[in-house]
Image (cartoon, rainbow, N blue to C red):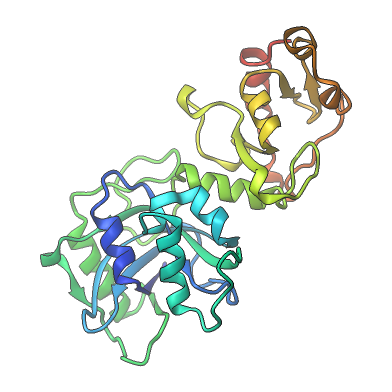
Length: 304
């Protein structure tokens, strides 16, 4: 198992540290030029402040990396981007960018999605082992090496009272250097579903990203989880109709439109044009909607 220590914007850390109940964060990169490939999902990403405060101050479980327009990253994560509003987030990002963008340019940033973040109290901060002053972005560590084990032990000592579990797993997350599937938050769910569907609506195949949202098949409030196979990427109007049961997806992945659209609203021609059409599915079979979830929606939400 590996860990990565990323150089962290001090204001980003300070803003998140004072928030209560943070279950996920977006560790943004000011540029989307370089994909982050240092970790696999479930491995440890640690935060190191800028000099002269050369300390590890917290971390989280790596879930995913992607490129996003800055507005979409804000819409998904809001203050979990480490800023009070989009204007301040842009100001901080642009301080690091080599080329200053136009005021309203919706430029792309790199997004490292982290789950179950933790923020150490000041007295728990500790120096980064084997760190060099010329490191700009970060450094990877292997827990099978002496330095890596020392780093792992230092983190474990500060997290001994915390439990980190993967989906469906119970017990302590740390202590055994084995990566596990991180438990996704709402914003990470949205982004992973968006990318799983190739950033196009499953029904219309439209690619206007600002109006595409991730719908839960089994709602989170009714026991559904933030997992890709419990998600559909839908245009916002179709998402609303899906949540209210006016459309559903059959277990053979076809759109079913309720006649109630016509009787309740004297409307629906646009949607009836897609009646029976096969939806676009994620390329990876593990990400396709689970049929048992679709059956649940057909039986419990669809108004027929």
